[in-house]
Amino acid sequence: MRTVNVSQPDVRSMGIATTDTDGSSIDEACTIIPVLIADDQKADWLALYDPSSSTSPLAADSRRIARAVLDALRLHEGL
Amino acid sequence: MPVAPCFDPSSGASGGAVPGGAAPPNITVSGRAKKGAYTVTSGARSLTISNPDGASLSTTVKLATDNSSVAVTDSTTTSPSWTAAAGGASGVAYEVVVSATKDGATRQVAFTEAVNSTAFVDVSPIAVNLTDGTWTLYDPLSLVKSISYDAPTQVHTVTMNELATPTYDQNPCAGSTYDGPRWYKALTVQGTNITADQNVSLMMTATPTITTAGWNQRNIWGTTCAPTLTNAGNSGICGIGIVWQAPSGTEQGVYRLISAYTQSSALSVSQWGQVSRGENNILGTVNTSFKSNGAISTVAGNVLEQPLPAAQNDSQVYLYCGLGIKTNSSTIPQDAQT
View 1 (tube, one colour):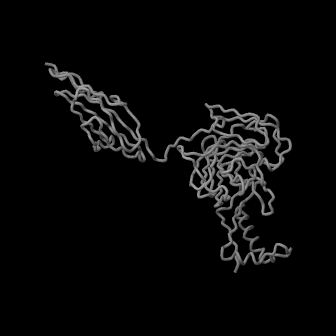
View 2: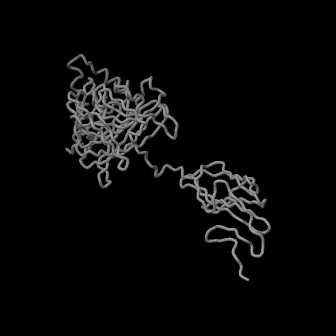
View 3: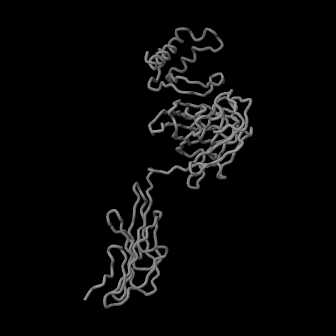
């Protein structure tokens, strides 16, 4: 089963000036959430995603990533 | 009959006439005075003794901490020698006594030789003076009008020319170009040039002193192998170090490549950072910012095993200080200062 983990102790808020995946600049106060994908699952995850398809990845797969990230954010915010 | 002393225990000096006997012989030790204290380097030590009266000589060396004797080669000649140990954690001191005896009278020259500690403690930082002639300013947009340095306070004041139409290119931590001004010099350690393949750990401190700078600034201080490149990122300037930004300089943290990681605290008045780089990689940075009472206000850090572009492999590492803007809308008024 494909899983996604978050290193919760490393979640932190700070100002970040960096570059997004599309090359655009980011410069604002942010929360860093380290998402962990095991090496032996990288190929599986990449196979799920077709950047040219607006319906990719599937909702069920997307939700695994989204829930991991949002659970980490909730915990970081004390919710 | 009163007996006159020929050795004064309060001073360590000796000599003088033996009661009813001969005057003590004359000796001098090159570069050494009686009761002198000298700092020497570890390793081979030797003395050159002048013995005009042809007295019998004896040189003894003892370790001050435990009074143990150190082997002296040719101890009865005018050129005795021994080996001084490395300073170690606490440093070492030797008590050296050169004695000359003739006709029952003795004269001594006693002094101390110390080897400094080699421990990595209580190391004094090197104050940076960008105006001392060793730094080169690269300023393609001519944004620096002038710079002054006040030695007693170690404060630089930079007066800027106007930047009316800013872009991200003047931001050292955004976009793909950084064409802001930067001062740079080759990094050397005790005269040895440091190259990108060597592992180095560099500690640095900075204290923003203008409580409200004339513009929304982002300044960086750190290392690079390509100080005059304007293409930022992995193909270009490839810097790593500490950053302070915002008008008051209270947003502090680290940068690497073209990214900055900062923490904001209005209480931050100074910062301490450490850069690790080597093996032709940019590695890690940490930053700790402090309040005026010395307590910690914020921390920030970033680690990255980032290979340098091939052209920079094994090349000279430079220190550099770059000035810039925080956002692409940060104009710099004429004569603004930081």
